[in-house]
Amino acid sequence: MSARLDAQMAFLMEADKLKAVTRATRNHDQRFENSAEHSWHLALFALVLAEHADETVDVARVIKMLLIHDIVEIDAGDAPIFGNVDETATKAAEAAAAERLFGLLPAEQADALLTLWNEFEANQTADAKFAKSLDRFQPPNLNLASGGGSWTDYNVDYATFETRLSPKISRGAPKLWTWLQPKVLAFFATR
Amino acid sequence: MSARLDAQMAFLMEADKLKAVTRATRNHDQRFENSAEHSWHLALFALVLAEHADETVDVARVIKMLLIHDIVEIDAGDAPIFGNVDETATKAAEAAAAERLFGLLPAEQADALLTLWNEFEANQTADAKFAKSLDRFQPPNLNLASGGGSWTDYNVDYATFETRLSPKISRGAPKLWTWLQPKVLAFFATR
Image (cartoon, rainbow over all chains, first blue to last red; front, top):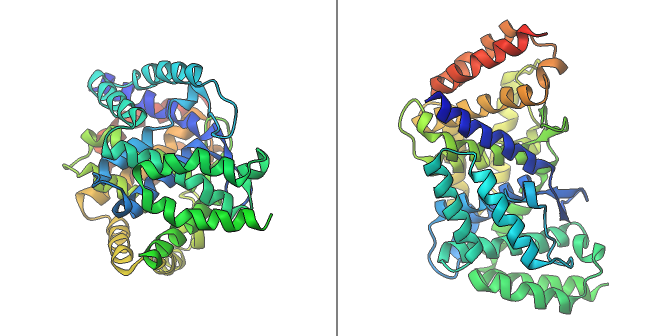
């Protein structure tokens, strides 16, 4: 029992490091968001917005997925959507990180969380598609609230925003894209 | 539909401010933890440690409770366990904050989250008791990882730690207290 709890605590204390992984998005107060508080914010998005998912989702599973979706960044770092990232290298680094980090847990918990993380990454089930869409829907809302955020920092125009984000948000939550688009258009129109 | 989503987003973007509420506990890297990343960390504790709850719990409910348990701090601030806090005033401020913040949501969602938050605060159900215990179990683990943290900052000795924390952690998770106690004793023995 103690060895089992030791392993669980080793994972949970290693997870603390996610609070030190900085993202490209800024919070209201202009501070760059970290991946731990981002994961909390997304889980709250899922709790409140589940009714807007394109297909019926299991909210509890979506929340669990979002709680663990970025843990790999402890080893692999964050890959900004407007950055020029080597996707193949990122995927490989994240897969290795998932093996190491979830592998700190007792075997059956490691398997369960690794399976859940792989489901999120594969982006095929209703739960994963909604979770992925929320992960893309939250940052533009922060950019609107912080007066530009990563759009300003990465010199992004509206067309680039729509090309990169519209398919990703619409995949699991088309109603959220419909709600967001005019707000982002209005923001770019004033620049 | 749009008015409903407007209300939900008003709540979610107001919740962003929890990332700017600073706690007394320090992360691994000595930075003071904020209440948003703390809420994420606790939700992860619940996901991994549910089997150690004193009574059987509904993990999904415990996670939801922990995601929202500190949102009132946006208005009321954090009340450190080793600080000298006026408990009556804190309770009143938090109750008013819960009305205002959850009240941003559509009525039935506001009611549901306010009810869940009140259940957490009342600390009587199995889910609430476990959630509360995790909220008290995580900070000493961060203190151990950061070399003292709030124990050093507030000049806390072992006896004070045990008096304040043992009943709170043991109430919902006695096995976690049993695991933690010798580690904290060993830490204080070296000081």
